[in-house]
Image (cartoon, rainbow, N blue to C red; front, side, top):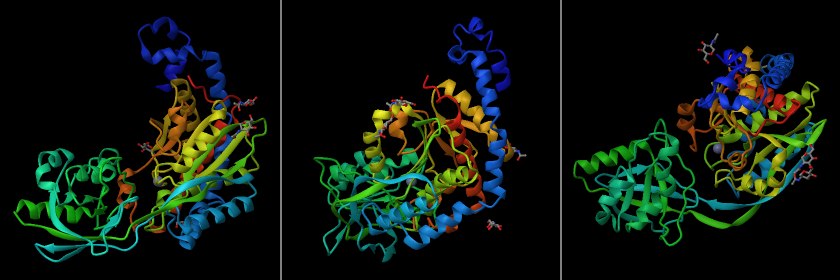
Amino acid sequence: MKFLIFTFVGVVPLLSLGSGKAIHKNDISPRTFREIKEEIASYEDVAKRIIDLAVYGRAQNRSYERLALLVDTVGPRLSGSKNLEKAIEIMYQNLQDDGLDNVHLEPVKIPHWERGEESALMLAPRIHKMAILGLGSSIGTPPEGITAEVLVVTSFDELQRRASEARGKIVVYNQPYINYEMTVHYRVRGAVEAAKVGALASLIRSVASFSIYSPHTGFQAYQDGVPQIPTACITVEDAEMMSRMASHGNTIVIQLKMGAKTFPDTDSFNTVAEITGSKYPEQVVLVSGHLDSWDVGQGAMDDGGGAFVSWEALSLIKDLGLRPKRTLRLVLWTAEEQGGIGASQYYQFHKGNISNYSLVMESDSGTFLPTGLEFTGSENARDIMEQVMSLLQPLNITQVFSDAEGTDINFWIQAGVPGASLREDLQKYFSFHHTHGDTVTVMDPKQMNIVSAIWAVVSYVVADMEEMLPRS
Ligand SMILES: *[C@@H]1O[C@H](CO)[C@@H](O)[C@H](O)[C@H]1NC(C)=O
Ligand SMILES: *[C@@H]1O[C@H](CO)[C@@H](O)[C@H](O)[C@H]1NC(C)=O
Ligand SMILES: *[C@@H]1O[C@H](CO)[C@@H](O)[C@H](O)[C@H]1NC(C)=O
Ligand SMILES: *[C@@H]1O[C@H](CO)[C@@H](O)[C@H](O)[C@H]1NC(C)=O
Ligand SMILES: [Zn+2]
C-alpha cells in the first residue's frame, strides 16, 4: 500500500482535488521523496549492525544490567529526596565513564514532599487494616488522625447528586477503570471535588488496570480557594468492598492517619550527555526518559527503563564508532512525576533554539515489547518516519502509530517539533505503575535489548540524514 501511494505521487496533484490524503505530497516533489527513500534505505547495514550489537552481540542485556545496578543500589527516587540526588551524581559519573560528549547538569528547583507514616483503619462495620498510599502533595492529618463516616461514590456526578451527604465525611471514590487518561482525573482532582462539598478527606480507588491488593500513588493537585484535605489511594479491592458494604446499608467508619509534609523546593538537575554532531552540531535529536520516580518500589519500570534505553541508544552508536551529522542529546529529566518540572525548565531555557530541534523522543510507557513507534508530526515527516521504521524489519517492529506521548517532550511537540514515543503494552504497564511492585523483577532484559535497538536506529538515522524532519 505504501509503495502504491509513492508510485502515484507524480499524478496525484492532478487527481487530488478534494482528497486530503494527497495534498501533503505536493510539498515534497516525487523526485525528492524518492531521494529521501534511497537515503534512508542506505542505512540498512547500519541498522543491522545496531540490532546485532544490541540484541545478539556484546551489548546484550547491558541496559537491563546497568538499570538493575542503579535502582538496586539507590532505590526509588522521589522529587526532593536524597536518593534522587545520589542517582543524578551516579549517572553523571556513568555518562562520563561511557566517554560521551558534553556531559553536564542543568539546574532545576523541584518540589520536596514526604509521605511520612500513614495508615487507614476501618473501624466499622468491621476492623480492617487497609493498604494505602498518600498522594503526592497531600497534606497530612492531625496526629490523632481523622475518624469519620464514609460516603462511597462511583463518579464526580454521583458526588454532585449526593453533595448534601458528604459534609463531615471521608469521600471514597470507587470509579471504574476506563483507561489511564480518563480515570486519572479522580486521582488528580478527587480531593478538590470532595473538599468543595465539605468532606474531611478523600480516598480514591487506585488508577490501575489490574490489582493484587496494591495501592498506586501519584500526583494530585489542590486548587486555590478550595480547602486542602488529606488524600490517599486505596486498593481496587477495598474500594469495591466498601461500595458493596454501602449498598448493603452498612455504616462504614475509617480512621485515617497521614504524616505527609511539604518542604521548601530543593535544588536538582536534568542530566545531559551528547554525541556531538559532525556536520550540524547545533541541530539536535533528543532522546530521553525521566530519572525521578515515586517513593515506592524501585522506579525500575517508571521510568528507569526509559532512562536506561535512552542512554543505551547513545552507547550503541558510540560503540559502533558512529557520529551522526547532527547532535544526539540524551536528557534524563528530573521531577517528571510532579508535572514535568525539569522538562518545563529545560524548555524555557532552550526554546530559543527550537528551529534546530529535528525530533524529540521519550520512553515513559514501559520498555517491554513495543508494537511500533508513536509519532506526532506533519504528514511529510510521517512518511519519512515510516521509511525509517522499515529499517527495523529484522525485528518485525515497523509500524508507525499516531500521537507521540510523554510529559517531558510535550512542551516541544505542542510548539510544533516532531515527537516520538513507543507503543507499549499499557495493560502490563498500569498493573505496576506507581506501586511497591515497580521493581527490576518487572523488567525483561531481552525486551529492553529490542527497545534499545529501535531507539538507537530511529535516533541515529534521523540525526544523520542530510535534512531535518520537515515541520509541514
Ligand atoms: C541475557 O538475558 C537472558 C534472559 O535472562 C539470558 O538468557 C542471557 O543468557 C543473557 N545474556 C547475557 C550475555 O548475559
Ligand atoms: C543555541 O544554539 C546555539 C548555536 O546555534 C548555541 O551556541 C547555544 O548554546 C544554544 N543555546 C542553548 C540554550 O542551547
Ligand atoms: C541553527 O543551526 C544553524 C546551523 O545548523 C545555525 O546557523 C543557526 O544559528 C541555528 N539557529 C538557532 C536558533 O540556534
Ligand atoms: C510481525 O508482526 C506482525 C504484527 O506487527 C504480526 O502480525 C506477524 O505475525 C509478525 N511476524 C512474525 C514472523 O513474527
Ligand atoms: Zn513516568
